Image (cartoon, rainbow, N blue to C red; front, side, top):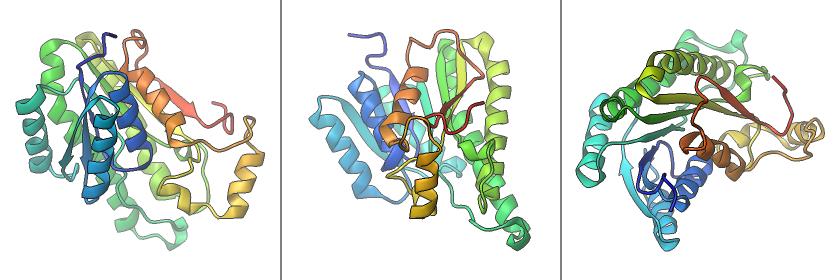
Length: 251
C-alpha cells in the first residue's frame, strides 16, 4: 500500500474527459475521490460506479464551483464522510466564447476571467483550512497550452488560463512554508473532451503533424501528470507547470 492510500482528493468537473480520467486514476492509486459535477448527474455517478467496480472509493457531489455556498456545502459533506480534502484537482471548465477579439464584448472576455478566477479562488479557500491544519496538501490546477501559444478565436480561454497559472504561482510562494505544493498541468489539444470540439479535422491533422510524438493527447495522458503532482513522488516541486502536449510546444 502506498502512502497516498486513503487520502481524500477532490476533482472538480470530474464527470467526463480529463476530470473523469483523473478521478479514476487517483482512486486506482488508493485515494478516496470526490467526483464533483455541475449538471451531469448520471455521468458523475457512472464515474463513481467505475471507481467502485475497480475496488476504490468515490462519491459524486454536485456543486457550481463559482458559488461559495455550494462549494462550502460540498466540502462539509466530504468532511462529514471522509474528513478534510488533502488533494485538490481543479479541472472544472467554465463557459467561454470562441471568437476574435474584434468581435468580442467585454462581458465575454471579462466574464470568463471572472468565472475562472472566482472558481479557483472559491474551491481553494474551501480546502485550505484542512491542509494548513495538517501542514500538508496538494493543489493542482488544469490550465491550457493556449495560455502561452495563441490560437485564433481562443483569446478568452487563453487569457483566463494565463491568469490562473499566475494565481497558482503566487499560491506556491505563499503556501510552501506550510507544506502545500501548488502546480499547474497545461495540456495541448486533447481528444475526447469538450474543448476538442473546437478543432475541425483540418486543424486536428495540422496539430498532429506538428507534434513530435505523432498524436494528440488523450485524457489519461493528462491524468498521469496530475497523479504525479498529487503523489508523494512530488516532494520538491511547486510553482511549476507541466506541459502535456507531445512536444507540440516546448517551453
